[in-house]
Image (cartoon, rainbow, N blue to C red; front, side):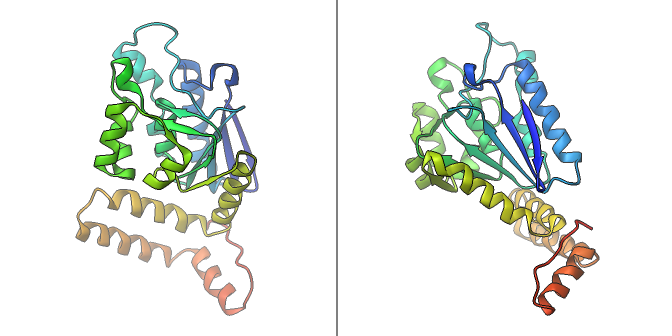
Length: 248
């Protein structure tokens, strides 16, 4: 696992290319640790998660053994990704299968290379998705499409995944990284507190009634009025210059 920071953008790289960047207990622990570092680092405004080599993540490395419930608990990582309050982008540079797709689903945005294949094929192995796939996939692509994907264990092409709404953008393999980091740079240039509150409103509001969601939106809007970034946004507009947000 590698964690780097450049210009307010953190990159977490799944770094087991010889094993398809599959998740074993060590990788799971290191990924959770990296997510916590990203959460606590005030310099980070956006986090990109990707894989080393030609694969995003080909699933889970069970070391040839039948996993126990305790094993699965130690291997779960998606909740740690979803707990990052800052915007997250999955740069799907290759296959994202089973737990690999569940990792991508835990991110806010997904950019994929055209050679990528994506799917939850757990049922073909006699199990069900266990790291959030049964819950996050229907929320993103809809119940009908998610059910068909999981019941058939079929892998989607990047083009199909884009049509489903599973991906936000696709690009040629050599261009996908550039697009993802251009997107990250754009988001990182905006007010970071506002970006975090926006993410909170969108995600929490999805599980609220409309009235509750509107209340959350109003409350966070009021809180933002007291930030220095809000004042900077107004001042930069009036002075016709680019804003310089500090996350204050």
